[in-house]
Image 1 (cartoon, one colour):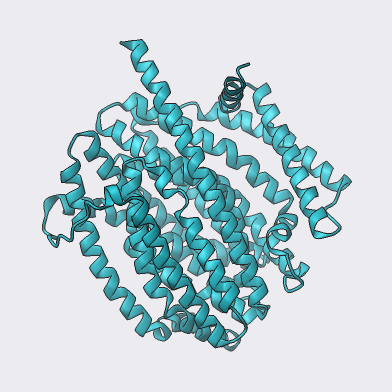
Image 2 (cartoon, helix red, strand yellow):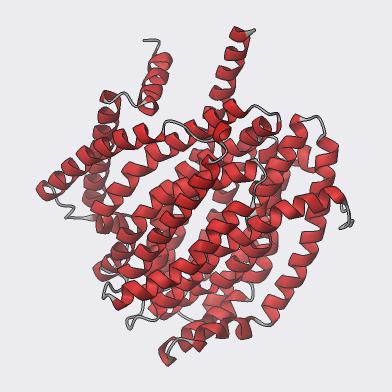
Length: 531
């Protein structure tokens, strides 16, 4: 029996690895297409005012989306439905999901209409604190947002589809939807974007169309499961209320992330030169590449399995799963963060500088922000994985507490560091510092429940620090010997070479130190080659 359980465990681990790699590939395509989108924003909106207006237009609709629905999908619906499926109560679990979708769709429709009608009044909040130089930017952003509010309704429907399919572990059906969305957003920018109010509004209209296509794609690929959906208006249903009690703290936690971005955009707009809002967006897009591919993929694939293990009382297996997923995520994001600190301007240029409109000064401005953001690659990896762990066990108020700490500390650190004379770098250092407080809160509170606490983390951290230290030293030396100068293709080749060399050194050091995350992949590679 013991051998049979080991065989099942190996099969489950293998399937989870395949699912994680598949999701990573999907996220990689999504991030790359997102980069293309941001590159063309810089090209088509060559005027910094229109560039900042386009970026600012997304802030309030994104906040509304995260406040009302965004974070609840995988973090409330997925574990609840996963637990129901594992207990053989699929119909009961899906009924609660049906009610949830019905009620929140109605709420979102009303909010979208109000947001479009009163967009100028809503965006006027930015004018309360900014000078006259930013009034035109805010006014243009308000006009552009009128068609971004309806977009979030279709984004909500797509996210609901993804949350349900992930509960069934249908990761292949959800991995590439965001890429479809980004491709059509990119098409809208290429066709419509330009330095006029008319072009700006037409671009956001095209982006709304992309959201409609995104939803239809997700619904079609998961139709065999999603056809169970029915409109059910029963807000007094006890199962629905249980789901809402879980979801509400998650909704608020998710909105806090967006509130913090609004705060950073406000401080970015307070600096005298134009272009800081767009530069902040560039840096945010870059640091979220390794975080969004590695941490998010690993955490999302872990969530339904961890929820099923916990609900079945398999606490030792739940602890082992969380420990391995957390170490695997950090094993990949730690060297990514160090690479971006050292190569910050080169990375920004590689991603965004594809025309004369994106100047070296633009790259330096975004590079400064990226230095401060880089620590967040590591800290937010832990925060995200630990949040998923709390959601899996149904303790959704703890991530809300950590989020509230961030909401208070983020603006305080921004103000303090600006007064200390750190300039724009203050904003992203404040953001990363804030995430350290959240990390400590989440890790300490989760570890109080000994039987499900992650294990083996201290030894992992020490070995990773040694490996990444050697990697950083060689990367700095190689950058001095071979600077990233020359034409675009040469710049990309040099950067890719440094990335490959530094990654190989980190991996070799980890293998020499016998880190199980490195030896695992070596064994997998040998198995594939039949060595």
